Length: 150
Image (tube, rainbow, N blue to C red; front, side, top):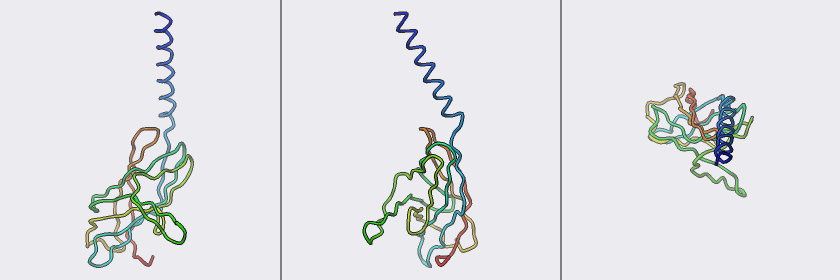
């Protein structure tokens, strides 16, 4: 009985230390070139993007919100033959020390309930939610509103 308790204690201590190692150097995410395309007149739907870079372990982008936008979905865009197939994604993975570029014509933010007052030159705060090693964290970025032709 004493041997089992000792083994269990050592195993618990190793798991505890392993958890410390994971949180000692959490991945760091940086964002550049965040944008939201100005919605077309009379529409409240648009898309946006950002370039995300990770230093450290893999990260999953799981959601985005904004106080200025009703709802934001993550969409994945992939070519199948000659057709661009777009679909709602429940998360987008960024590999360890890798990048994810959300942009028009690829993976992107699909935005609904966008205010008609949002115009080119304005800025929008985007709250990005991530998961890394089973733990959530957030990053807020400022996106510039650009015209469709930019």
